[in-house]
Image 1 (cartoon, rainbow, N blue to C red):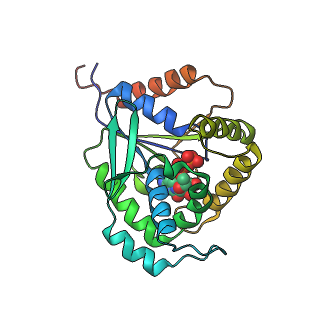
Image 2 (image 1 turned 45 degrees about the vertical axis):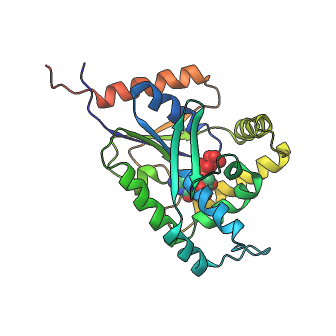
Length: 234
Ligand code: CDP
């Protein structure tokens, strides 16, 4: 059986397990996995470190734009998963903090930030063979992606998953804080002007509230086989 190289775009709400789904699929089919949310998180971390976000949430957009010209974001795949680097420093752990999560959706709503990151993401997909997850991958970044998924789960399931993940990483948060954060971010992501979170018309909806990781993996792998299979050898 022959398969063509395609782009797989996975979008959906916060903490729906998109990255777990994307990573496992990418590993199985030998594709590159890119977590676009990590890029928005890195820019947020950078803004926080440079004191560009006031206590009242006002962002110094001009200063942020100047930073965007010079910062360098890298992803390195290690045996223990993907690591995100900011100017050569491993910031994988720091970008997952609640402080970054509390500010990221405001940063992601800034058009100039989206423009720079969208271009970087499109460059990464130039040769296809990529799985990218985020909020606007199937609608804005790769509107022509051959395979598009839109992932949902109930808010309770999502908050429990993210809470467990944070505890496992030794980070502090309460279940209530996590729930409040993901619901607030979803609302901001859905209501922003630029590339809001929405399902692309041609995306396949997956509600994984009741699916085990293995069931979910088999489902998306079958979809990949159906979509990427070519008839070249017939
Ligand atoms: O891990 P989680 O699903 O909660 O979020 P993430 O994928 O790390 O993304 C963090 C934030 O970045 C989201 O809440 C969005 O505000 C923003 N984002 C975006 O606007 N567009 C993307 N393609 C990816 C993330």
